[in-house]
Length: 290
Image (cartoon, rainbow, N blue to C red):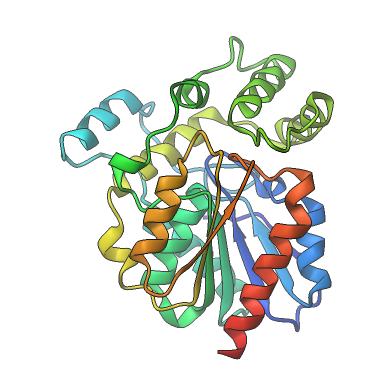
């Protein structure tokens, strides 16, 4: 499986590996955020998950049936999926191996936070610290989005082959799930999303990623096995993954610290980039010294 990546900063410095969320490319980690971590003395690795961006695609014989998958998960039945979050964690380890990184600070956002959790549990010796952002333990009772956010996530553009329509659709989606306390101007949002859409747009890949999330189920028992120093960051105004899910994640990882950011939704608003990068760098500094 080919994984597209970027390495920023001095290769001799301690590494921070960034794992992005559902359907989001490495561009989802803002340049300013990455450079702030580099300025703190870290090598930063950001990459496209499988089925996204310029990374490889999973072979699929038929279109993902998300409604059937969600129904099966609700009934406690197995969900058929081309791959799991564990496979995506293996991709990350494979990338670290390719880059000669024995141990790294692992940072994941949303679905990326779920992958990071699995990685920290599965490969404890490869993880210097864990940061889980706007993510969940898989506890279905606490992971329900608002009606508007859920509808926005599952909506599809009227013409997925028309870039302009796709961009406008995604601008509307992020307008719903973004940070109410730190709204991104619509034109700026359109510019960022346009850059991503022009680079790659693959809704079928996103659907397969979502299948992996649905199939992963409840991870609370797995979280209890994590030994890495852990920081959980969550927005108090997140409409897609409620704050309760972040609290639950922190409660089930031994010794985890929870940072709640008022006004933050399910995005990385420019006004918070410096603060979030600083908090993560502090956590990595402290973990390296522990």
